[in-house]
Image 1 (cartoon, rainbow, N blue to C red):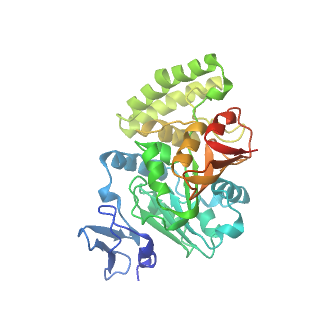
Image 2: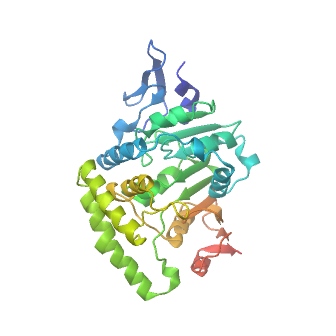
Image 3: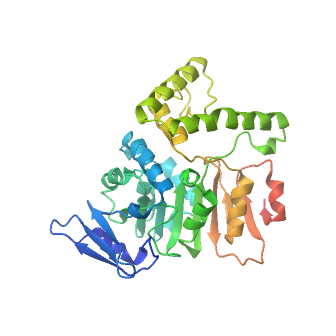
Length: 357
């Protein structure tokens, strides 16, 4: 039996949204076909992975090509199964281990399973659906083979092949800002969250943040965005991969020599920020992708408010912007917000929320 049959109760046709799906298994036992009784659309199951990417938009398919290359640069994620990553996951979704144990979880944009393995170990008596648009799902399946409770599917986060309101926890780390309409993508994953369930996201933050109340820093940030970041992305999205690799090398040489990185690419612990292997992966993620937007805490908290979340948490120990919330607030009531890390501009949220210090 194909493994996808065990999670049919979570799936829906991404073409017509019907949940009347059936699975046909081929003789080899590892491939098959998913068919929708409502619209007659069919989807391949290849290597026991349902493939729903054939109904994605043109913009999403371009991202598919970029991130298939991106994930081919790093195919194994065993090193991420550490206690520190478990803490990041729990902080991102605003849960503790006991709440996770029996949960139905969605990793929306799993890549090659970096966090899916952590989610699967935490939800040991539950179910984890690891979904990504890219061909990274093939590596994810290999990386997650030891987890019987984890199921890998290939689908678009802006049009997930999933039923609405079926997940206790939805986790999306570093994905939504790579979509053409981030607000719409946020709403899309929000619809998959049960009433009473939690949604946790991480998105890029705009730097320097406006909370500094410095016109000089704001002007520098805007100049950098429009004079460097956007033109470089516009160039790299139109060039073949070998040309982008050459540009990446030139940028790396300039940054590594001066120890100054205006591109926002250098990452890693001190002393390892300019390793070219890591630089190139981040460069692809930042500049080869057609979409890589930056946001503010105010903006994302507004989205949680508009989608009727409560118990919204900004946690310590996570990258900016990381926020979670519990779905199901009465729209007429204020949203409770709790900041576990200091934010200079938190006062802005008092107009929308009941602020919990």
